[in-house]
Length: 114
Length: 115
Image 1: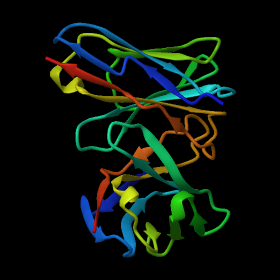
Image 2 (image 1 turned 135 degrees about the vertical axis):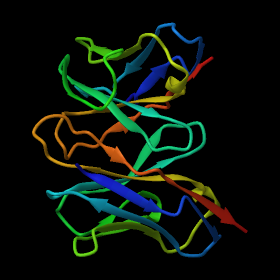
Image 3 (image 1 turned 90 degrees about the vertical axis):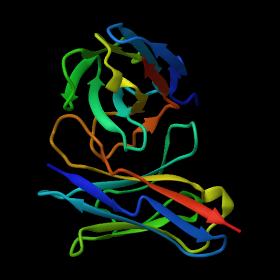
């Protein structure tokens, strides 16, 4: 069973640029959630996709957007990057969007915005 | 809105000593609670979860946690610490909103294990 994978592992961008982060969910999982973890903080929920539709969003501006594909892999897009967007971005997949379901996390993408 | 508070950003114990990591939650409806561990440069791994089936929850690597509604707590314990337990531990809460299963995390507790 393949776990959650994310790419790239590290990324450096400059302020104002755009970035796309990718996530492959665990086999059999149809739900993907994205979290932002700033240095020294706990992860914060960005949004969740269930069967290719966004079904929940945290307190993040619209320049954070996402997609989920028919194979349930997902992308996180961030436009007009700001210095505060520097963080570890974590993707988690689960077998459904139910509250009981365990979310399995990938290793993350570390983004540095200069 | 739901939240969790982790008391103590850093905890140091000797190898073989009891590990106690504290988590208190706030929720207006029955919560579901989780403990995750994060090793350096890795993602989060689930240690255990409480979903109302039993108040004492046993997890992986010898960890367990007890849900105490009267104290709004879900503290993580392990009888005997091992060097490999050194990591960052996060408590998280979610509630049944009928839509997204959003996890709300605490700020984490870094566990140091010394010889």
